[in-house]
Length: 212
Image (tube, rainbow, N blue to C red; front, side, top):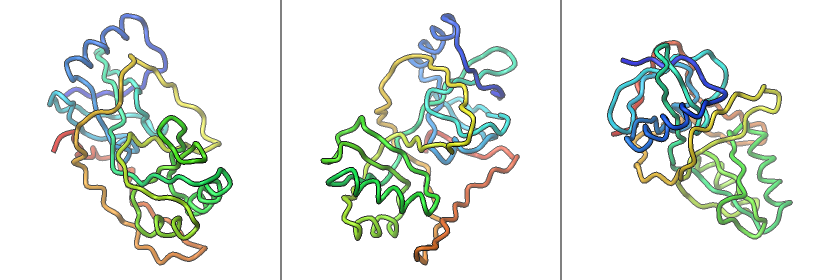
């Protein structure tokens, strides 16, 4: 099994061409957010090859990150569309209010301005949680279920990770999300709510795959 243990920050023209060929051959990883939070895991490429990822703990893998192994072979990571909750509002102030309440609960949030949004022109996305969705609806925000590549904001104090782009492509993959994201949020919501994620950053390879 190939083990990819380094994240590339820059790519040569030869490497970009190689990634483009691999993409056409489905030789890349399509990973959801939960999997990309781990530094060590096993996964299956879209073409069906089992590979391992063994990285230093240097932050969450992002869509279009490129990994390399000791033999110089490349592997591109693409953020997999997954079921999330989309939040829009009638105005920027109301959306900002919703972001405040979600941030106060340490909820991973993605901010977006590129999709079709509400009147405010922006949207928030978070992993599905019916209690949080109800809270936002009570605040007057619009909630809907959707499926997009989930790329939440990283901490403001984290150093930026190298992000090597291999090629330009659409992320609107039709692959179904077979990872059952277990909701471990036993919510007894009050204003001092602690949002407890059970993402385990253990050192054993985590069995994850791109297919079902």
